[in-house]
Image 1 (tube, rainbow, N blue to C red):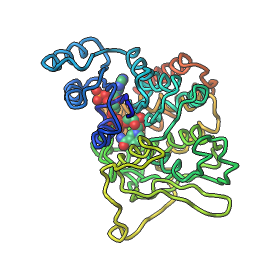
Image 2: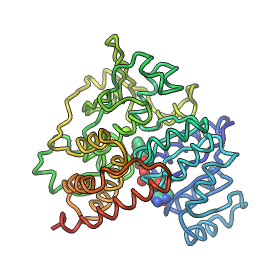
Image 3: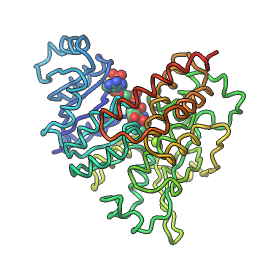
Image 4: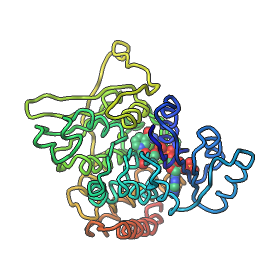
Length: 397
Ligand code: NDP
Ligand code: MG
């Protein structure tokens, strides 16, 4: 019986995780669930899964959750704040931690899980982009198992030889020449640059293949998501930037590929449903039912591919440059992007200004050195956000 903490339980990944968990009551029990502000949704999850702990972001929300759960048998103890998040992630009674908080907000708790040597199911890609070296080194030192949830990285993991699954250092020795990340191209794959300037948050969040949280949906529309995934792949699999390529594949059926020295290209295919990578990582190395139906290839008929267009999707270039320059650049890229996306969703920034803002912040502080501690990572993140915030009025004008 595996005992699980789900960080970000009310989100898209959190909900899919609990859907898989509920199919296997003989294998999994829920130790802790966390959320930020959706207290009602968290209360419903607590009634259903009866975790030992539930965590929300502040005292008023914790009080509200306690009152919602008051009629219950008192099975769940309610806690609040960042420290409590890290505590349930590192708790000795939790074997597995699903890291599914969105953004840098998830870094501290996800890092706490890695440092406690947990089996970490990593969805929170921003944590790796912000503090990749620090994160991966901490996981290795503590003997934590990192299992990628991002569908592309999970696909790559599945296509690797077992030795390289256990240790990224064995990738080159295993004959891997290159990894190929697939990208759907998002909702604006065929829009002109001119059209992109006026798209709305609602259009940006309407992804053709995946149903996801709003932040990652916008990242998919700008293709910054693929840029973040490029950096995520670098840290997870230890390959240099030149050995990680991106191909647009609009059907999102091939989730990514690994190319070997002999010319073999191994791919993982499946319906675009996050319960597949989640079930894979939950049960690894076993296989369990995820609730996802079989892929009907004749019904699908065809699989298409095209190169990404850097002129309409400059975020891809920015992410690649940030990875190439290394140091603190990925952290700055991520922080500026988070702020820019929030400004776009709030109606304060045009869609095409997201990349412009990120580029300006990278020009200002992108040459900083890589954060050597959590505090340094959070400080650089805060500095980049402040610069991005200050840059909004000029771009909005
Ligand atoms: P959602 O926005 O749907 O969910 C985010 C979760 O994090 C919610 O539970 C939310 O709580 C919680 N949260 C948000 N802000 C904070 C905060 N400041 N402190 C603590 N908790 C917080 O996001 P997704 O599930 O879509 O994405 C989660 C992560 O997984 C992201 O890093 C994303 O990039 C990654 N990912 C997602 C995929 C997907 O298909 N959705 C695919 C691949 C990766 P509340 O609900 O209360 O606001
Ligand atoms: Mg992905």
